[in-house]
Length: 282
Image (cartoon, rainbow, N blue to C red; front, top):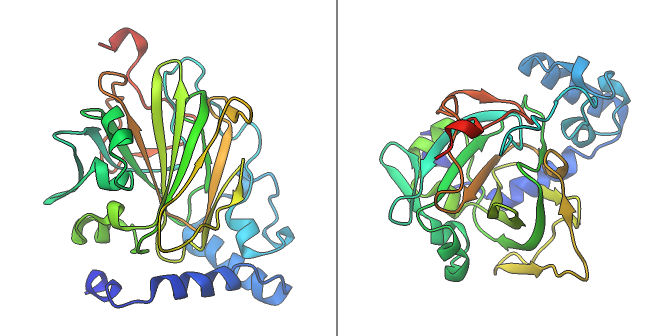
């Protein structure tokens, strides 16, 4: 019933209302909301750079809070590290152009990438992992590997919830929701970091463009050249969700081998290795 009702909801209107609510700076309101979220989700504020919840200017400032520098050490020896704190939804191979969403549901790599066939061809038969961020998680997104930004695509769409329940119920969920596709080039080849919007995710930010405000009804593309390079190191912050959602990583064929612990339901922390040890890579 919860999943069915989402088809009827005015997703973007609700997201716009949430955008306003989460930016209220009146202390009685914003402190009440922050306090209830900390209590309900048992948020560990000892990891935050600013530990006092009342010192945040708004709920959104609290939600996208920065962690202490030593809170999430980055595994320097790993080929790839987790870009977020979250829960593994899926991880595996892209088979026949299809990406596994949940039991009984797949979606195509081509539609995930906004119908860009040239781009999809670069990742044919590659690997993917889907990482879900709950409201209690740290909501900044970091680089899984060192890379230079090639292009960014905003793909308009719905804003269904991306909770485990709706992931199981709504077909092609991640290919239907609004998303931001970031393509990087690295020494190991290209990779994609895809930020999937969801209900109440009022906006998505990147460190190179700030809040993304594209045209809503058609895909928008940005291309980056050597004259305006954006190069980020492994573990460096690349963006954030203003409210929670999902990140999908996509790699070409035979470039990565996922860690044995990267299985549905397991939690990951930003900076932890998500690939098999180098000596086990084939």
